[in-house]
Length: 272
Image 1 (tube, rainbow, N blue to C red):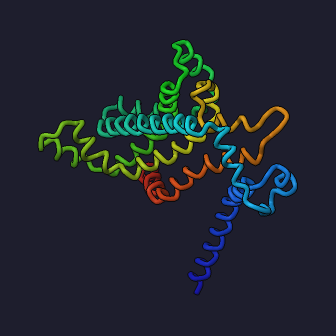
Image 2: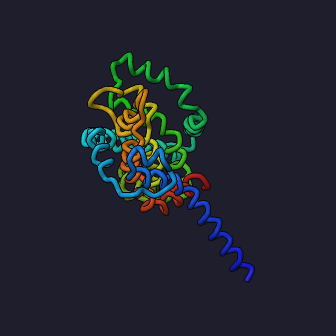
Image 3: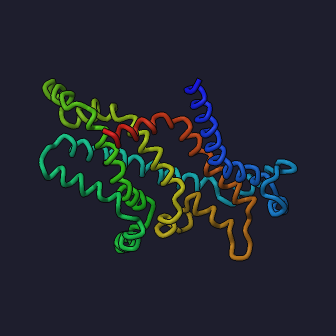
């Protein structure tokens, strides 16, 4: 009976926390179907009628095709670079017991403690000197900024994979690259999913770094374009909220489908 009571309490607490977490998204959703007057009248009430024109106008003003391509290009390209670079680095460091490898790993891990704001100006200045303020350069910036966390997670997960697998494959004639690609990388799937989900949230929603590197016509991402709904003298809340729903929805769907892998990947990477 006592265990059942504890379970009920935990379920109720979980529902309460979930409701608190979902409430801002609920407000964003219901207000995206209102006009400006209804929003200013009451942000908490349901819309009197569903106004889908907000989404039509928002998508037109976002130049949705081009901005979606830009966001997808940067996000997917950055993720591919990050996953392969960090997993290979973690594999090489974890399988080498020399002091230099451990020192390099510690240096990479210390990168978690360095705030982006502290290196933002030098980073942009260096890339600017080489006329490299464009989308490919932005992907390499994300690679550098995200490597510490991704390598940390991969390194921890690799501690749970016995080296005997590598040795058996090498005895069978496999090259180091084949060992990594055919044996080790597939075993790191939960950690890879975790790295993809955590960093896609960052890359997709980031405003600050793209705003100082690719704030040019034709290269704007969705968060950059959404900013134009907020002018100096007016704020188009109905259009902005409709645009935000469009921006957030893919990430919510991604996280819902992959959340169990995220939990396993974080535990594999941080606990072992």
